[in-house]
Amino acid sequence: DKYVTENFITQIIDADLTSGKHTAVVTRFPPEPNGYLHIGHAKSICLNFGVAADYNGTCHLRFDDTNPEKESAEYAQSIKEDVRWLGFDWQTHEYNASDYFQQLYDFAIELINKGLAYVDDQSIEEIRENRGDFNTPGKNSPYRERSVEENLDLFKRMKAGEFDDGSKVLRAKIDMTSGNINMRDPVIYRIRRLHHIHTGDTWCIYPMYDFTHGISDAIEGITHSLCTLEFEDHRPLYDWYLDNISIPNHPQQIEFSRLNLSFTITSKRKLNQLVENNVVDGWDDPRMSTLSGMRRRGYPPAAIREFIKRVGVSKSESVISMTVLEDTLRSHLNKVAPRVMGVLRPLKVVIENYPEDKEEILTGANHPQDDSFGEHEIPFGREIYVEQSDYKENANRKFFRLTEGREVRLRHAYYITCQKAIKNEQGEVVELRCTYDPESRGGTADGRKVKGTIHWVSAKHAKNIEVRLYDRLFNHPKPASLDNFLDAINPDSLTILKDALVEPYLLEADQDVVYQFERNAYFKRDKTHETDQPVFNQVVTMRDSWAK
Ligand code: ATP
Ligand code: MG
Ligand code: MG
Image 1 (cartoon, helix red, strand yellow):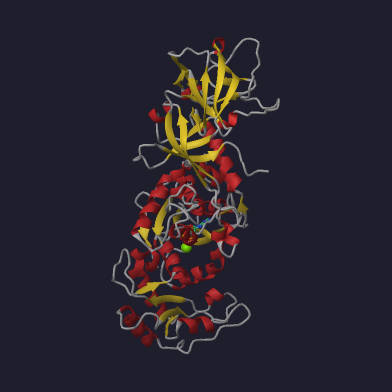
Image 2 (cartoon, rainbow, N blue to C red; image 1 turned 45 degrees about the vertical axis):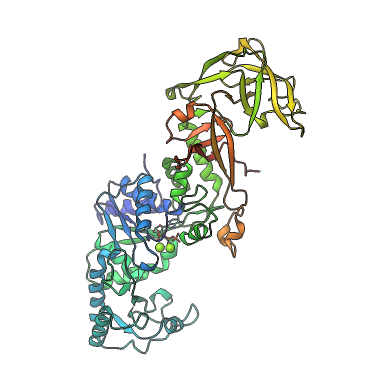
């Protein structure tokens, strides 16, 4: 089974292998370590690592660490954890763009020697001003015609730290009238006295992304450099750099459309704002679209890979509905999640004709469609809890659950009939008095048709857990399109239920898998194991409550 279904990129690769242009595929995933990875990155990861795996090739993990201001080792560490968690392995191929700082510098010298780069003393504002725009050609810098000797001298002195930050830059000498603004003498190096996570204070000049990226690809022998569409009009520059320096490889840059997901933010900068403003409980808050948030919430990595595969790879921009992700999760979890019974909002039931001192052990299948999951024991007794919503005072004939005089099946147990609801002084129902049919053990009895089956837990044996129910973090389908995406925060994105009760089996069983609380939702135990009361996160509901 392939990771990536056929698309325009795999067609290019097939052609390159057939023609003999390449004999092996080498790709790279190039994150900037300036935040945690999100669901958008999963597309790039699944594509780059997936294509490499499908073609028996190699995928490199390369940290694009050319902007020391926002980068940290913590972020780099989290990125590695997330890529591994998604199921991919870069083996020994972990690199940093900063590994190539010396080579990049030497290539810049080569460009100067060829008369293709010059030191510009204009300020950043002047450079921007003189670059022109779509309708206006740019103006040549007054420093554009400096001699090779002067440029070499000035660039070496930039590196040696003789000039102030921002006082000079190195620019490529291309064409200030180009219709592609990226080709109007782009900046190659700027002076910035910043401490770098890998190179420390060795450098006070740092190379720009476009210069660094293509050369890093070429140094590593990347064959196909897959990136998102916003780099399409940077491709001529990518190629110009590689055409004008002495390096044998010339990778092909191929652009594909970004993954945009409705009701979600896919920008590290904006996700960072959610963390900074304490809208969420950190980068791995289960409501975050980060991979660490999804991991904590209980999304299986295989379901994320399946989702990315469903979305496919193309060049057309679109917003994928959140429902597609949630449906992928549901159909995956339906196959892999063991079933248990958990009551989120308990209502006590006393079975009046069940002997006071009796208790018994029933069994329940761990998966109704798959015997290989086995079964587990479920204790039963005179007092049980059912879901509050499974009782209704004035129920019509279509309500197949509990109301006075109506019979229902307790899952894996007996038929019970509701005899009387007991109310407190406020008129709220606090307890149901029921009777059971001893002949209906296991959930069948001769002749009678009972339509409703409800879940329950034994009052004496149930374990108390805290349950966290999640809804979408945003109540607007395109939060990023708003002036302030923080205005679209859904105030009801988190509901905490502290009185939930589950059958004891749940806490004895594997805590690292997702369980279906039958008729409720899918849940996974939270990473916070230290509190007395176990916490379970709702992964996804059984049905799409947003579909109208
Ligand atoms: P952000 O705006 O969140 O910082 P980025 O593109 O700047 O995103 P990088 O760390 O540079 O983040 O991303 C690493 C790789 O992941 C890049 O090749 C980038 O194109 C890709 N990527 C980022 N976001 C998406 C997305 N939404 N869909 C597909 N690929 C993405
Ligand atoms: Mg980037
Ligand atoms: Mg970015």
